[in-house]
Length: 214
Image 1 (cartoon, rainbow, N blue to C red):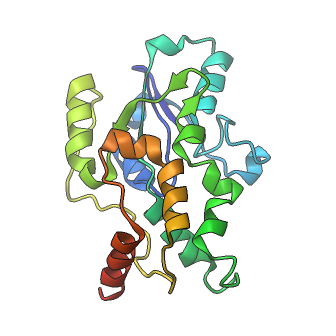
Image 2 (cartoon, rainbow, N blue to C red):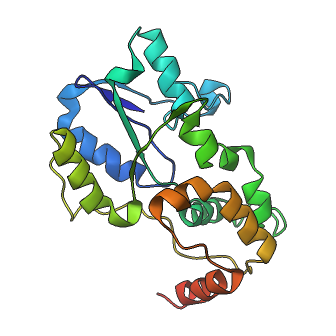
């Protein structure tokens, strides 16, 4: 989470252009009055701890309560969570450490760390919802529009590259069960982003295309 003195709060969605967003915010470092820096173990597994680097909407509320500020005075935003980039990162970090069964997409989706990134757990907290969303696929355009609309003061640069996950995908196939699980748990972002709900056939075709890339 990053808080600026002109009443902006960005919550740092993991594996969703968070590194690129921090690069942009570094351009207005003089405006930053609070920035989360701790990992989840340093926060005792509390995903709504304001000090956790990927704190959620609950972390925003806890921070504002601690500094006696009114939520209505702030503009909050984040980037869209994407299952594919998060799962690729998980594979990259664990392919040589975990069994094939433990790398299964359903097992991944059932992990506590993964569930913490589901929209309902990340950008919702009670009646509060972070509604200002930037789509990673259109990061430069969306952020530029948001920057102009709210006069944040950042200079956007289309040459800044995303810290993308390794595109290598393990040899697995999406099943209807996996796709239903993804669609159910990421539905809020799919609706806002106007993403087409894909079938297992669609997703498996995309994986085959990725495997053919060098």
